[in-house]
Length: 283
Length: 174
Image (cartoon, rainbow over the protein chains, first blue to last red):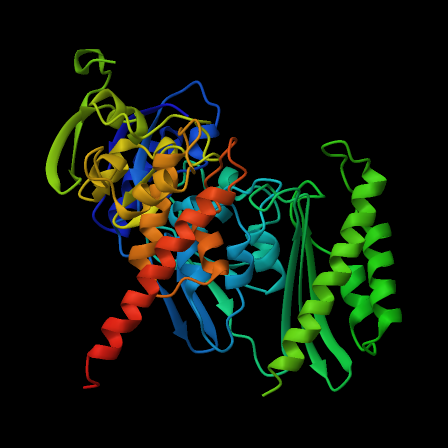
């Protein structure tokens, strides 16, 4: 992406105003790591939003509110009793990239291999968008229904935070990504968030990415898990349901059938982790 | 590229290796290019796409890829490059250990390795292997197979950890 100008607004309000005035000729810049790879003939004005006090992680009521320009490394290092995002952030890219890439940038422009949108879908997170007057909370389901960057472009609207529910007792979260090398892009990435009632799954949210075009929930898999006893049969059925329920694309020498199988196995692993998580944090 | 060739010229000021500097640049110039055209050539161009780690520098103490950072993003920050780590006459402890351990073959990856190790040493006070791998996971070496680099770093970290523990033991509890 060619940049013709670089501006540094001093407040979120000013950033919105500048972006609105620039229309499609402006682009919010946080870590900017993806910007280097974006194609575009028309140079744009970069609006640096990294100095607006949007780098933080706060516990607010039953949520963690994460500022949009919080680097992935900070999310990885954060620890709290009902916090679960650190593990997936540790598995994303490399140390140097985690230091500069931000959660807001990662989710505002969704790449097929992105892990965080999958995690946020499974966790029933919401995305806080500033529209010039108010902050709007948009559910992850709504935010990721198509490419967010297309909806945000030219409007001046700005992702300012992400709200992730704090996991309650008996809630579990598991996220597994399949990669060829540790720092490579995901080939398949699955996240499961569930609640347990004894040895039964009370309710579950399952989301998948990378293997499919755009991150998506898997309602059939969620329906299957709800009310089921936790045993090997349930997990095998989950893997089969995911395998038959998703339309996978071929990638890097792997047929769609193989990617489907891989995604089914990955879903099983993610569910096992979520169950283990819930059992370990039963109180 | 000379300053006169800059299109849409602008300026960026940051502290580089302890000294305040102001550079002419352009909005889409990368920090790596700015550093190299201003004589800081120890920071290497490798892949140019945030994979190999040869261009690693520290910004506000954190390791970053200079090839994936616009120079303008460094405004007001504190940047350190390999030139700020040691010299031929007076190498840093890790640099000396790399030499002594025969850990340098072509040497292209070494400036990046040294910078990532520096970030690790400054940010952490204990150095379990898991943490060391986390800090070094963005630096590739295509010559050595990592064994000797790892060995050299491990020796430095073990000494540093022992020294930090000794310091702590000497200080009475408040």
